[in-house]
Length: 318
Ligand SMILES: [Zn+2]
Image (cartoon, rainbow, N blue to C red):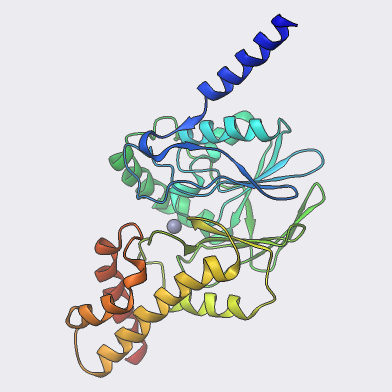
């Protein structure tokens, strides 16, 4: 009996020892969010040495014979940590992976999954695959390597292998996924992934909570706003999983990010109509965005988002 207890304690010790720990950001593990649904909430801070480039929300859906993963993470090394945590939930094989968009912090960890499960099917929007191969993967590799120094092993990239288009329905071992591709929102490669069985919507970076992303040249702040306004009017899902930050109800996840986009676009339209430049209305924009003060990176991103929204209005008005 003594030996049995000793064995159990050893096991617990070993499991604890191999927790996915990121210094001051703490330990990361999958939380049960539905009957067969688990989400690991990554730190929301921009990629740095301490978070090792892990910042997104990998998710797993357990089917009868295996697992389906959404956005496994931002590098090969992160992927190995995430895989170890997945195995604490279930040792079933990973059958499929879905990637929400082209940014490497969401999909570079495909490499670790494909290495362990060479037959895994990796799904993404068709344009995502084209863009990733046309230089986006390389661009993100350089960004993340410079900021985190943790990209070793990530090349050769494990690109998605199965191209999806808006409206496609994918069934994996009894689990049903319906995807849609908004033309341009966070990027022009986004997929919203609905897991029909659990009534969960994976939003990708079209929604973030606790941080703001970059709106790069392939994005549209107005397009993102329109997408979220449409989502608010649809029948409600049980759970909404943003690309970064805490999952929750539609009101808790979609609404705050939508409100931010509405304030920026409304204020920039007003500035444009008043023939003012974006920077000239910074104070009144900041006054309306006080509740976002604690979101990571707002001091850095706000001016950029205002400029981007203003530029979009100029283009629309031309
Ligand atoms: Zn992104």
